[in-house]
Length: 228
Image (cartoon, rainbow, N blue to C red):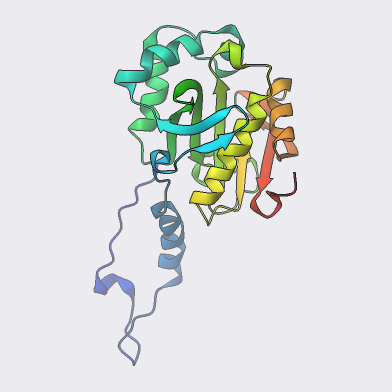
């Protein structure tokens, strides 16, 4: 991951103008722009509050491994989940996946989804434009990506995915005014997931080849959020 350390001392900024300000050399501008984009990373969804759905009040709670690892490991070992997440195995497998995000720079935030206070889903909210995914589609600044799994089998097949995807994308838009699009890339073979995205206001923009899957590139536009 590139370093974001750079010098901004006066001697590095450029020659002074006659009014005392300084020009910024083009090569430094090219370096600063991506750094400024990275400076505005995600805040904690813990502060986003709840949202009322037809199934109850839903909210996101950032993962704590000391509290949540056993539950997440159980979910990752369910066949319907393991087929696409590929994290089946002992708790160390799940812990390594989650810890990579917890110890990162807030480009990705792993969360539990709570419905009326009960954990029932796992989410990853991430800056898609700063993710490796951006090499596979025409990313725009502040694109926000989401990954989702419904952890409890009793909650699958009831249309909950559609309701929750709409709710979470609304929370992203409400809390990140510079985010114009929410992005997802479910495995093209995962028909229930693709259908849930389509039914919640996403459109399938393209099929893209990722290192570990062929994915449907799903996009929900802020400008169209109220049309469905």
